[in-house]
Image (tube, rainbow over all chains, first blue to last red; front, top):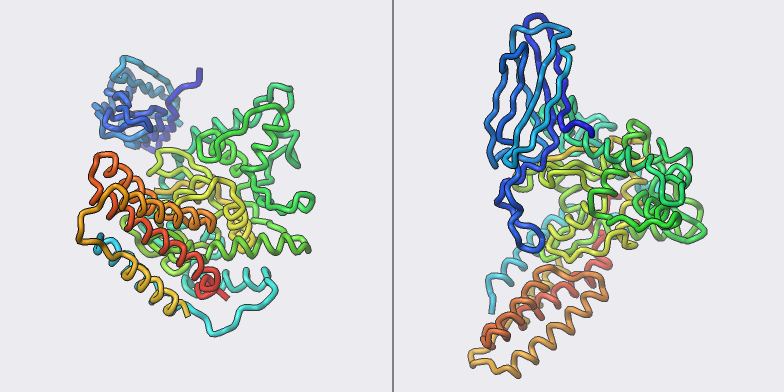
Length: 103
Length: 288
Length: 103
């Protein structure tokens, strides 16, 4: 099955810029469907970016984050060819993870 | 009696009447439609009004009108929100129908790089055929149920097909057939006709108020407005079809929308695409 | 000139919305509803219905179902006025669309 995570990590000198697009409905639990029934909450609760086993970006998300979230950040201390591991856990206990090479 | 409702309607009518008078031309309209002259005048209106905007940039809608929005959009394009719809569209496009055929068998050039030729006027049938209509006809010809014109599947498919035509100039033809001219004229009439309780025509927003704000949005210019469709709208949280946009524009003026792919909708798409001939396909687009 | 067309629209709206000071009976409501629905049918033929007309018709029916014939009749009369305004708009715009045309 295709990963829900698309990631691009590019290194320049000391800084690595990371962009990620994650496919997830991110239902807040406040929206009703066409029949008037509440769509149950279904959103990512924790998102982690790890380099060399250390978390370089940690997000604790809630219902305010919209569908198919996009994340962009930079961090220091990595180099080209290093691995970057991205993983998430949602409120239903589902998870996904991917490892990408820093370009 | 709801005096307030009536008065609001009157106020809307009178204020738009004032705008209409301002825009009215003293020149009498010609008897036979002249699409070539129309397209030239349409282009001139926008290039005169926005002299700093490059002609091919009008297809980027609000981003050609507002620098701050443009910056944010450029950043998003590095990692566009429509990637998932595009991939889904590509997958759907290659998947064979129950009878073994694919979309490639229905379209010229296997359906790749042809979006800029739609809509076209079918002389056998005597009507305008849009890409969405052609897709559903392909499905039905091969024993598959048609897709809703306003939902995800049609949006993903047309997004993929538009993507294969990115950068190609819009290339709409009006054959020398009075029915084609009538369809073009019908589309033009629809574009400029006021509708809904708010008494707006498409032109009210996209000609007279192009580049201005409507609540928190910046209005796209009508020149090249079809070139970016289908669009991923953040407001929709996903990719939406041309049909969906036309339907929602209608309800936004408080007009009861017509059926997707109605004559008027196909004809207005024909008119707007024709007057944008030469401008590049920028679809699938992304909008706020 | 479209200014005249829109003045006619305004007059029609002001004239048509006259309400009644007496309590409305179910018969009054039914007559008002019939008139409104007939006008809306004409608007539909012209392919120029307003969403506001539809919601006002729905409100009239809802009030009638609850037994409030005063409100129901008033809403039905308002719906008729709105439907007639939409018909006037379609008729006027048959020629006045050219006022907006870029030439």
